[in-house]
Length: 443
Image (cartoon, rainbow, N blue to C red; front, side):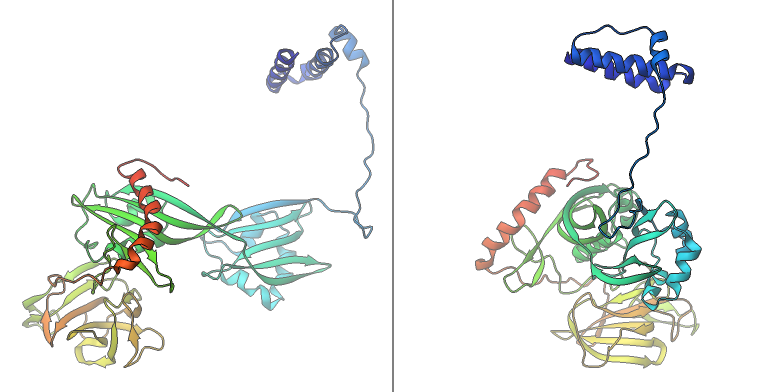
C-alpha cells in the first residue's frame, strides 16, 4: 500500500505541468486512486463517469472572533532590510504598509523620530501588516550596541511606541580568507564584518604592518561571536581566537578574561600579544611622508628635517593613542595646528598633529588607554592636505616610529595559565580546524 501511495503522490506532482483542460480530470483520477489504495477495494470509474459526478460546493466559513467579540484581521509577517537611499516612506511602501496614513500618524509622535533618524542600510525591520496595508506592529532595532528596539503597535486609531530590549542570541562563527588586495577586500569576500577586520588589525598591529606589510597570499582564520536577533545577525561581537600568516610567519592569539573581568589577547603559551606601542595611530591609511633628516617642506619651501611620519587619511578619521599614557598637552601649537602630546612610561612621548578636533572631555592630565580615540584627522597648521603627523620621542629625542622596537606587555602569571588554557584550547582547536581550508563559514 505504501508503494501505491508514493506512486499516487508522484503522479500528483506531475499535475503542475498538466494543461488546464485536463486538470479537473487528473485530480479526480488521483483522488479516486488514493481512496482505492487506502480502502483496498473498489474499482476506479472512467473519466466520463468522474466528470458526471463532479460538482462545485461553496460553503460559508464562520468568522473567528476574539474574546471581545471583534473580528480578527489576518496579519502577515513582513521583513525588509533598509537600503541605501531609503526613507521611511519607501521602506513602508516596500513592506506593503499604507505609507501616507501611517507616516502621518507617526510623524506627530515625538517617540517615533528615531525611526526617521536611524535609517541605517542593512538594518532588518520586522512588521505585521494586514491585507489592507494597515501596520499592526513593527520592531525597529536602534543603532549602537545597547541592543534595544522601538516597538510600534497599533492602539485603536493611533499607535503606541515603547523601547524594549531585543531578545539576543550569541553564536560562534569560524571563517578564513586569503589576502589578494587588502584586508578589507579579503574580509568582504568571506562575509566577515568590518568590525572584525578592525579587531584583527588591532590584535596583530604590533607584529604586522597593515599599511605596508601585507602580501598577496597571506591567510588568516578567525573565530568570533555573532550577536543575532530572530535568527539574523545584528552586529559582530568579540574575536575569540585568530591566526594570521603574514609573509610566511604565523601569528596566533586567543582571548582570555581573568576572574576580575580584565581581558586581553595571548599566544598559546600565555604571552601577551599586546605591545607597549601600536605600530600606527590609524587603523588604515597610507604613509605620505616618512621620517627624514632632510625633506623639502612644501609650504616653507626649504629643506628641513621631518621628525615624524605623515599618514594620509580623510578629515574626521579617528586617531588612536598608540600606548597607555597621560595627556601632557591638547590644543593649538604653531605649525602642528591642533596637537596632542601624550606622556608615557620610561621617558617615552608621542605627538599627534594637524588634528581637526579632539575627543570629548580630553584635556591635560587625562589618563589614556592604548587604542582610545583621542582626536580626528585634519589639516590645521602647516598642512597642504588632510593627514596626521605622528612623532615618537625618547627622552625628548625624535625617533623613527617605524624603526622603534616595541616590547610586549607582561605574560600571564603561572597561576593563571591553567585557567587560560581551559578557556583558549577549544577556540584554538577551531583555528586548527579551518587552517588552510576553504571554509566560508561554520557555526
